[in-house]
Image (cartoon, rainbow, N blue to C red; front, side, top):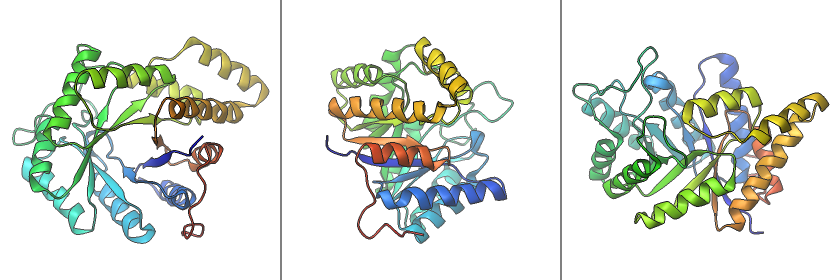
Length: 288
């Protein structure tokens, strides 16, 4: 089996302990030579400044290709494009363009009166600058706000047509979920690469809550598997086994790129990557 190309998602720290965890995560995973790493915004754009600091530090001190998240939340068009310009100024050439989640206390996303009303508008504006490679989100299972999976796919096509070059999916638990989605995208005329998003499970209860929020179906057998593993103290072994098997099935089905949601906890991701044949790259073994 040929080793896949990999990429990793980090989130910006909001405390001293979280800061140490982020930099440990970057140091642990950078030697694997990721194609890119992404850095998230908090809900409602709450970590905008912290995201910029993390993006700049990772780019400058670790030499990684950083794809900075950028959303439409709580900002005018001019403010959003200024953030993009600041990213470009420090050497960032990739952006993950998203609508973004509603701020805390709001039930649904409401555009700023002078802001971008959707991710499509944001993508169009970024593409018009000619300065960035634009990645977007994709949903292999119906987004909680979407009318249907077909509507999700139609909207993804609009994002690609607006200027996005690739999409990263929400996480899922079974390879067939991704393959059905990929086939439907091809049928809809989407020819941009679609990268599966993988969530190494550090905590099953937390992963289940996350799945409920983003509409990810949870197979009943997973509840049983983690209940048994918890009794035997084998949760980590189970998580590594499940993620490695999922990734192997995806690779066997033609997938060449995998994007890992690390949650700033790198060791499971590193173990899974090693199991897939992703080893430290020459010259990166001592990245610090």
